[in-house]
Image (cartoon, rainbow, N blue to C red; front, side, top):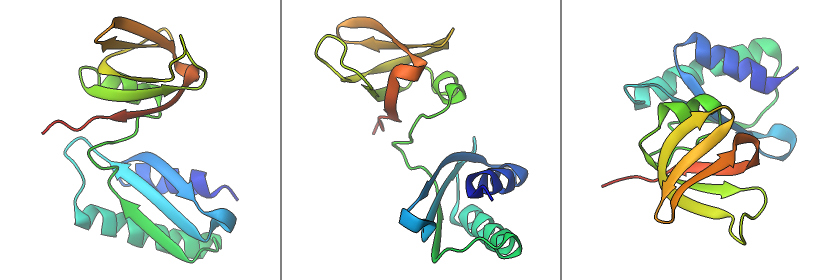
Length: 142
């Protein structure tokens, strides 16, 4: 049984986007991060948590604790669609391998095209292959 697939099916079926799914060793703690265009409320998290609890009971998923929350203001960018959706937003990006002795970059996301993430930095425009991006997060603006 693929717990991640079950979570994604339930979350998507409820009209939310699954941003991330984390498990602790032996899957005792399950963390689910959800989002939608208009934002996430506590009631949204409670509804998803209740639905997942019911589905896990039916599917026989063994766990101790389930946490459902929004991804926060510093939302991680994981899927290609995230890099398209948040074009124009400031981000922090970490590459798998160093590029010119540097792995961490900060700038404005210009988007994703042909498998390449484009970033406008103080040093100019940079391009990274999507599969070379280890981590990327939005940088909150206050």
